[in-house]
Image (tube, rainbow, N blue to C red; front, top):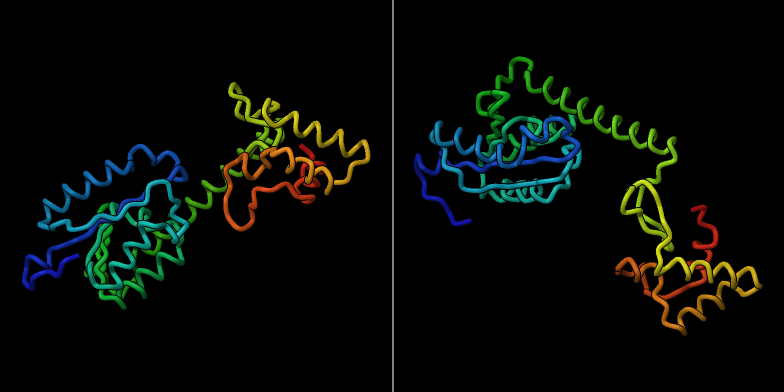
Length: 250
């Protein structure tokens, strides 16, 4: 960002940070990224602020502080490219009581950063250090809300599991039923390969020989079928891959 001229105009420059995730539950619609942006732009115009930068995390939970948009914001603050930023409320900054408290009480003051949470009426430039900060209670409630949402998601998953619903990605040889995402059906492309692996093994063929045979026939292995890359995924059939298929309960 280009250097700013000194004076009153520069002192009224501000950045905004927007965040939303599915974990925000019933708040999702009212707190959409578009609504947050519109609200902060209207507030900034009314209060005489000039928005010079925007940082965004769409689809990132507030309990994760490794969000790309948040990391970019922190880099700008540390490099003094930004000295003031705002969110619609404290929960947009994060939903971890300790992390948000550390930012407010230690990190931002050390960097000389002014932080404003508009709807919560919080402005670090006006915070009274001689009394209990109401934002501490708000942060605690945001933390509890995030934990409650997480527990609700976990309970919902367990309920589906008890009903015999399949959760997760389809293992090699299967695909998710297009009619019911909680049900597996054989994949016509890979199911015959799994059946052949079982037949070969039951006939006495070793895992090493099965892997070598599939490689010779240029049969795509599970990692290659799923498009995986990296050091762990060689794109080759191995005895370990064969063992995983033979021992997978699914």
